[in-house]
Length: 180
Image 1 (cartoon, rainbow, N blue to C red):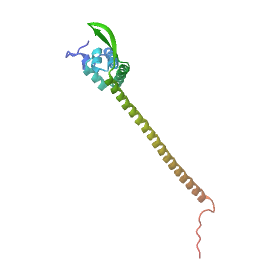
Image 2 (cartoon, helix red, strand yellow; image 1 turned 90 degrees about the horizontal axis):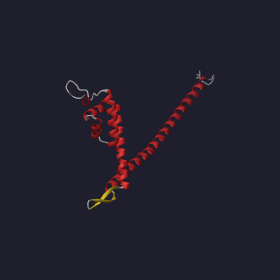
Image 3 (cartoon, rainbow, N blue to C red; image 1 turned 45 degrees about the vertical axis):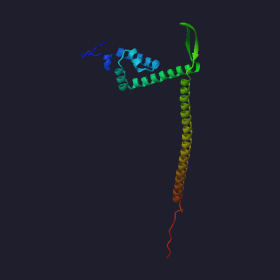
Image 4 (cartoon, rainbow, N blue to C red; image 1 turned 180 degrees about the vertical axis):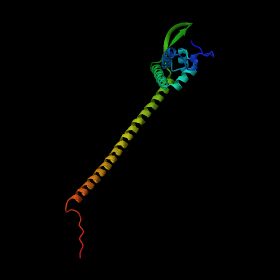
């Protein structure tokens, strides 16, 4: 590993060599997606946490990849929790120090918490759909008003053109007669 004259590793300074950097970024992002843990992912990639936070601050592309990896990690965690809530976890059963079987244990508290979160998500999605309906109705009303305004403008333009044509026809202009 290269070192600065100060003796500090280039990896901890946020300025790693290109070969290290790309490979370590890939390892970090892969581990972040798998574990949802910045600390575990940084350790696995051989990076200081300060380095990866600096990269995230300075590199929008890396910051976006970080967000995507975290999202993937939390989706994986959610899937695992749902699996456990639905199917339980096998726990070994021992008797006199010997394993004699296994029982399936369920964590009702976790299941209820997941249901509660799901209910909130469904409610938010429903509200968003309803709001979109309101927005669609609002757009339709605005479009109708704009159409009415266009019709009025067209009517006024047409009327003005008709008046101008009428005024240009011979004999149609008003004549003023004076009486003696």
